[in-house]
Image 1 (cartoon, rainbow, N blue to C red):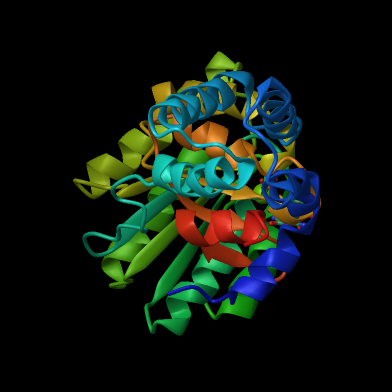
Image 2: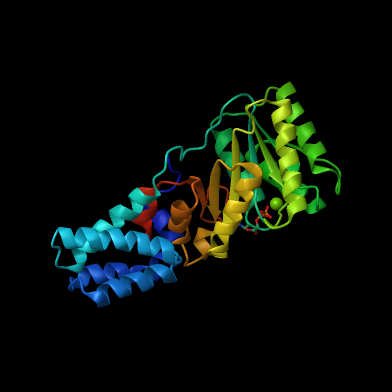
Length: 304
Ligand SMILES: Nc1nc2c(ncn2[C@@H]2O[C@H](COP(=O)(O)OP(=O)(O)O)[C@@H](O)[C@H]2O)c(=O)[nH]1
Ligand SMILES: [Mg+2]
């Protein structure tokens, strides 16, 4: 169930919705399906970060249908376009899969993408469902990182395990998962330091963290989530593919969709990366994390 009503999601996606408002205008004008129409639609989508490949794929099949069905006006094409985009983004296993006790969720990504914030928001959702949640401060790089997690822990009523600043993150993760097992927690959310997807040694460190979790708790982590800042644009595609090689991602979280006009990146990612988007971040507040629902997202993105 969404925490957000559609109007709120619409507000959160205001910038992207404005960037895409031309699509609705094109429908209202009920103009002919000529080259000018297709070009304008294409430009609008690319400007909103749908990406060239994804745009061509969507519009290619749409033009094909338009031709076969003898459509004459833009409203017909736009109506079908909206359904196509939602269908396009629908993937199996879109919900968070918590399996085992404790269910371990490993959260990875580059610096500043919103990992710690997303963990805090997730913790709040889960404790609200009466689950016992343990947070593990696997970002030992800066003391501030563990403190930030502790603040979220208090807010969400979740315990936090932290290590020494500059200590081995794998050791903190080991302590965390053993504690989660011994104290019978339902869910263990593991935070990690931000790292560039191109830094091989840091990606090796993630593999080690993953191995340690799996050694202590077979079949865990049940989820490895990559947190992506939606404003990074097409670089998010490279992050997804390199993090996936290192850690076998099970889901993506796209954050900061409230701050960007490039919300089309969600569509590009759903198309180009074979990993489901599980949540979207639409603000800094605790309740501003939404389970990703393609239909609701498309409805919020385009004026219905
Ligand atoms: N507007 C907005 N800000 C966000 C969102 N998610 C995270 N942030 C902000 O992004 C900044 C970095 O977040 P943080 O969780 O510390 O990133 P980390 O380095 O990946 O752990 C913070 O100022 C957060 O408040 C979001 O969905 N919307
Ligand atoms: Mg952090």
